[in-house]
Length: 255
Image (tube, rainbow, N blue to C red; front, side, top):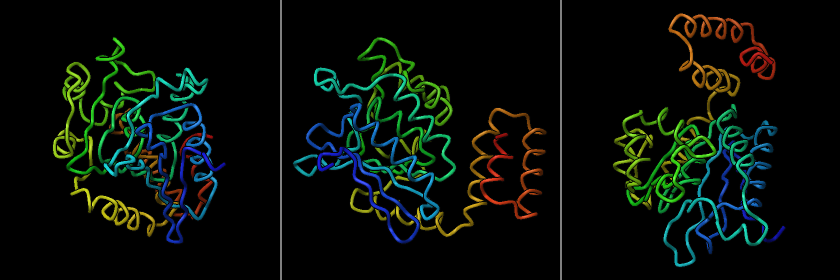
């Protein structure tokens, strides 16, 4: 479709670039956009040639950077509004994907846009990023239907999550890095290359090992120390006998 709200670029180096592409609406989230993003995540999961992907937003029509202004309220009048179930399923799908995701953020990233960013494995930001969560400020409830409060707390700590959600403050890239939202902060002109360099490093790793590490690290926060250590030992034993990636994933996740 010519008007598809997502652009997808599959490169030859194992990296894919996914771009939210509704610049005239500040990449605000509609049903069509989330559906397209969900389909692309499924495609990435199935494609053995894609080892890591970047998620970013198109710049505004005037050239200023933008990730996403969150849920598009106007889209509901156009019968294209998102649903709670759709956003919840998508963020969990990104979170559970055993291929690394790198969210590349400059300009506005707020509320629903932040929930998608928090579902990614890494967030790399520009100094000029404008990051906020206005669930409580705008909607009267700060939990977030797609897991905002949970992911803010897990990624940035409970105290930082409270400050973001209860005050509705907007932070820049340096502050996002300080509180643990971002893995690295760059000047705007260097952001994409910084993300690509990280992606190239990941793409050069053994893909079966990458799946193993993601499956393990994404779940040890809910385990005791001994459970996590035993899980790591079992996982390493499976890898030593050269279990195939799909079989390994099934064993780790109990499929």
